[in-house]
Length: 363
Image (cartoon, rainbow, N blue to C red):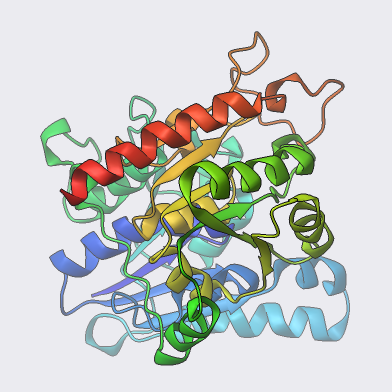
C-alpha cells in the first residue's frame, strides 16, 4: 500500500501531523508512506523513521514563476513524483491521499496523486471550503478540540472503511508520538553550547510570525532577569529567519547578562529543547517543537486558540487575556493590541506553577 500525506506547512502544523503519521506507520508497517511538504517546513521530517519518501516543493516559487518555463517545469516534475512513486503491485499511484491542510492547493495536489481514496476534514474544518471538491471522503472532526485529535481522526479513517470516528479510538495525549530524529552532530552542537553552564536553562522564543502574536521584547528581557534571579535558570533566546534583531534586543535588554541569542537548525533546536527546563514563547513553530520534545511550557496566546493549537501536556500552562474579540480571531494584523498585553507578573506566576509540576514528576 502507498499512502500520501499532504501537509505542506507550517512547522507547527507539520509537528501536529506527526502523531497521525506515526499511527499510520504502526498500523501499516509494510506500507510506503510519502509526505508532500513545503521545502522550508520539510527539514524537521528528514530521516523520520515513519516516512519512506519526502517530496519537497516551494509553492511561493511556483506562484512567482508559474508562467515561466522553469516554473511550469518544476510543477510538472513534482506532480510526476506523486504519480510515479511505487504503490500496490508497483503501480504508479497512491492508494490513499490524506489532506491534512484543507486548502485548495493541497486538495489539488492530493487529486493530482490519482489516489482512489482522498480523505480530508469535514467542510466546517477546511481552511478553504471549496477544497472539498477534491476529496472522496470527509471525516467528522469539528467536535474534536485539538488539531492533533483532528489529524488522528483522518489517519484512523484511512485505516477503516468508515469516515465516522468513535471517541474510544483516540490516543491519550501522553501517547502522542513525534518521530523526529536528531543526528550526532545536532547533539554535539548543543553539547558545545551548554558545556560550561553551571545552571539549568530556559528557552525564550520572542518571535511569532504574525505581529499579533508578539509579546514586548522588554518584557521578555525582564523575564530573563527574573528567571536567573528567582529560578536559577539562564536563558537561550532562539530565533528564526528575520528574527535575529528581535532576539538580540531581548538579550541586550536583560541586565543580568544571562540571556544569550542562539541560532540553530530545526533539528539542533529539538536537541536543545529536549534538555531545557522550560520554554516560554508564543504560538509558533518553536513552541510546538518544544511540546513535541517534552519541554515544560508556558505559552503566551493572543489571537489564536490554545484549546486548538496549544501544548497538549495537561501540566503545561497557557497565558492570555479573555477579551471579547478573541473567539475565532486569527488576525495577522489588528487595530488594537490588547490580547498580547499580558502582564509580566502573570507569566511569572505561570512559570512558578509549571516548574513546580515538573519538579513533582521528577520525584
